[in-house]
Amino acid sequence: MTNGQLLEAVDQAVKTFNKAGLKVGDLLLLALPNSTAYVISYLAAMRTGLAIYSMNPKMPEKQAKNEFRKRNYKAAILDDDYQELFNQIVKNPKIKTLSNYGDYSIKLTSWETIKANNDVNDFDEIPKHSGIVIYTSGTTGKPKGVLLDHSQMYTAGDNVVQSHKLTENDRVYIVLPFYHINAQNIALMSALISGGSIVVQKHFSAHKFWPVVENQEVTWVSAAPAIILILLNTEINPNNLQKLRFIRSTSAPLAIAAMDQFEERFKVPILNSYGMTEAPSQIAVDPMPPLHSPAGSSGKPFNIAIKISDKKLTKELSIGEDGEIWIKGTNTITSYLHNRDQESFVNGWFRTGDVGHLDKDGFIFLAGRSKEMINKSGDKISPYEVEDIIDKLPFVDSAAVIGYPDKIYGETVAAVIILKDSTDKKTALIDFAKQIRKIVSLQEEKFKVPQYIFFMKDIPRGATGKIQRTALKNKIIENKEIDKY
Picture (cartoon, rainbow, N blue to C red):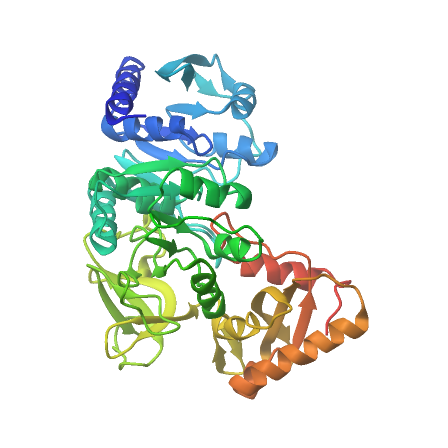
């Protein structure tokens, strides 16, 4: 679509919102897969001043119905599968055309009331708000509601434009889901501000990735580490990547070994980054090539202040000393929805829940989430540093390090391994476990060596590739049939 065609479709949608009686601050449920329809609906809702809640379009039926009921929505934009489910829980649904582009029609649903259901979990009343409603990933606890307004989204998007030196000649390939902040802000918002263009993929496909990048003359991609690892583990090689300036690694730390292998094989720079929903999405990022961050760094803070301190912001720590990461900036939230977790906000500063340090040149190094840190009898262990070592082993596809209950130490180190070539042979698994312990013991203190090693077929991850450590830990503890090595 050209800018003119996009604007025409957005204008039509805005008129429909107005005719439907939607007002500034009303809550819109947007449950579409990555698509042109999503972009049109999102931009029109922004212009109307609605609050937008973007929902995963592929939830199981029971979970989806709970999501439909649990907030005070005024209208919904749904794909066909969700439309059928939604019609089952509302009284007198009214469906009208929101906007057209080509031969495709986007539908807007309104209704009289939601049917009563005593099974709805955690109803969340959303106040009048212009912007987006989004929830933290919940990897370390119950997800917290974040309200981001237009100003915060613009500031954060402009930071991406500046730090990545984006222009109208840039074209971003969006493969991460729109119901997460990264695709909404890092990719879409920055393209709008820079005047560039976007290529939207319904979902990531390793087989389509390089042909799309080449054929559509993509200049940059925002990707989760899981995507980078999948591309590394396929035999597909691109023919011409002259237009591709960089790939931005986001949402979770990327193993140093994987980054080096990717850059060597594909000759494409990777920019490590550090961000979170509450900022929204960018706190630090690698400088643009040819500059490089030190190995293991997640880049340099960009247009945001950072302090390394204790949990109450009473003692600022020295260069190189790990502590709680606090941030402050015009794009950073000052409270959570319903004022949850108020202790994370002190004098305009926000405690991220991450642990790390700054070096003398201002680069940030993450040690882990404060709630993800393994506490072995007082010794704090970052899962990331152990994972980085294990990931270098040639037989390892991916690794996840977690704390495992221990009667003596409280917690001890456990490593969950996915092998490149799966095997059930005990002798082979015992040998792999020995190699893992040996490589960690050669590079780290003895207390960081995994006491338990589990070989599994998959590791639970969120939509953007973050390891869901709590879910993984529970799975291992509850399943006594998984062998320890």
